[in-house]
Image 1: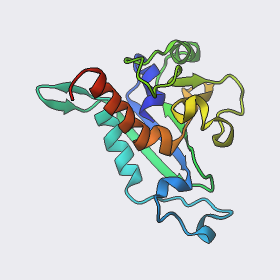
Image 2: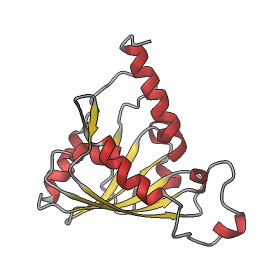
Image 3: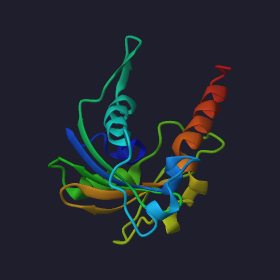
Length: 187
């Protein structure tokens, strides 16, 4: 979620509401029993809501005096497991008075703070104008799975974000961190 929010950090909001629809691959190797997820949505993923609420503030926070200062937002998350193989989808609401045009422009103009890493895609965040995008099956492999897709931006500010949970998620973030450390000669 934090990469989807990166382009709009300059907008004025204090509250973030998110409802996630998380792929079965996010449950790890043990996974979800096939008959439990088939033709079903499981409206609870143990500790996931608290993790999203806490980690979002850390990731979007600042580093001062050798500590992370959490971002000044309130985050409210509701997490659901859905019968999709790969690709977490999120419906995100920001409480802001910023016009939708300003938010759209922020998405369209977004450039990541660090560029040129080997596995970093040309486009970290892709914005869709189409009303039925992003979709996991169509968009999870954009940028070799490293691009987060955003769409259905509406007044309010409400939008849908989707990313490949295993490629862009923990694995991809770890690879990008290693590439950054290497490029800066910290190793």
